[in-house]
Each structure stands twice: as structure tokens, then as C-alpha cells.
Image 1: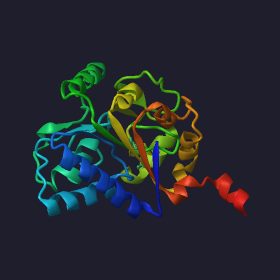
Image 2: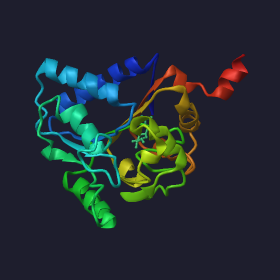
Image 3: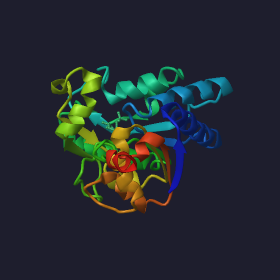
Image 4: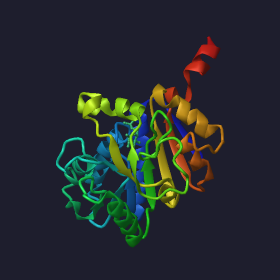
Amino acid sequence: MDVITVNDKQEMSEKASAILFNELKRNPDLVLGVATGGTPAGTYNKLVEKVLAANLDLSEITTVNLDEYVGLARDHEESYWHYIYTHLYEPLNLSPDRALVPYGLSDDLQAECTKYEEAIQKVGGVDLQILGVGRNGHIGFNEPGTPFKSKTHVVELTDSTRQANARFFGHKEEVPTQAITVGISTIMESRSILLLASGKEKAEAVKALLSGAVDQKWPVTVLNQHPSVTLVVTKDALETEEDSYNDQ
Ligand code: GLP
């Protein structure tokens, strides 16, 4: 794993967007796996700036969302369809025809998961997967304990994940209780992975990853078995409370 340590979130967004921009320049029909949440937002903003400044044509790329809430319409402000539309497609003036996002309003969620997995295969799999990490080590919405062989599936969100995402919805009770997420084995099939971690609340998960262990209790640690991972991490995400206590 390549580890790039940066001072703060802004520098993380700068570095990550530069990596993405270079990949997109090299491969105009890249299949880009996209994470949502607070962490990659600045990266997408900076990427948009770079793409517009260079007049790079991204009309042939495909994006594959990692996950989507169950029960939210696509035009709901907190749906992940809406997130990727407003962070990438709208500012780049691209039609979202090639944006794959699980359909969280499907009346047959199991069938939707199978369909999504097939859609990923149909576009040839993900070339570059952007990932964030949850405080509890989740990737996508694969919560602790998710089998590493999992494919796209429906998850019950943990209380801590709903609490963490309450900031986007105003109140925890507004956060959906279920989501569709790409599975861990689907993530592992991506040809390369760009993992972003910022903020001290991610330090326990980052520590578990960098320990080199592979443990279902910390889903992110599965990435220790992937041949091509770049981690861009802020300094504060490298220091757990226990570490800072020991330093005093
Ligand atoms: C969210 C998303 C993940 C994301 C993670 C961290 O709920 N489902 O894809 O990577 O949890 O989110 P954030 O970047 O907001 O801390």
C-alpha cells in the first residue's frame, strides 16, 4: 500500500484530485467507483476545477456508486444519486446516463442488488475505486462483521453510522435504517483503490488498517489483501486518542 500523509483535508483533496485527474487523462473511458460522504466532497470539487480548466472531455467515463440509502428518491437531497449528480455531473455539464447508482426505491431490493452487480460486470468492472472509511471501519456501507466474500447487498445501518450521518439529515431519526451497498468482494475486484481518510475520528480505523491485520471486525483491513491501494491520510487521522495520551 502506498501511504501519502498530508497536513489537512484541503491538502488531501488536492492530492487525491491530482491522482484522479491524471488517471482520467490517461483513460478517457475510465470506470470510476465513487464514494460519497463528507470525506471526498472536496476532492470532487477540486477535480471539477481541474477538468474544467483543462477542458478535459469526461463524456465517456462511467461512475459506479458504492452505495445508496433505501427509501430515498433520487431527487432527495441526501440520496447518493443526488450527491454524485451535484458533485460531478452537474458542474461538469454531463448527462448522468452513465452514472450507476443502486435504486433505493426498488420494490424488490434483492433483485436490485443482483441487477447492480450485473451492471458493474457489464461495464467491465471498476478501474479505480475511491473509498472513504467509516469511524467503525466500514467501507461503502459494509458494517463490521460483513463477510469478505459479500457481493452487493442490503444492510441494516448500525446506530453509530446513523449517528455519524445525522449531520447531513439534521436528526438521526431522519437517517434511513437500510442501504444497498456494493459488497466487500465487489470492492476488492476493483483494479485499484484510492482510500481517503481525514479527521481524528477515523484514527482507530486507520490504525487497524496500518497494523497490517486482516479482520472482519474492521472491514477496511481487507484492503491489506488488495495489490494496488493508495491511502491519502491526514496527520490527525494517524493519531488515535490513546497515541496522543501516550505522547503527553
Ligand atoms: C458513509 C458512506 C461511505 C463513506 C463513509 C464515511 O456513510 N456510506 O461510503 O465512506 O460513510 O463517511 P464520511 O466521509 O462522511 O466520514
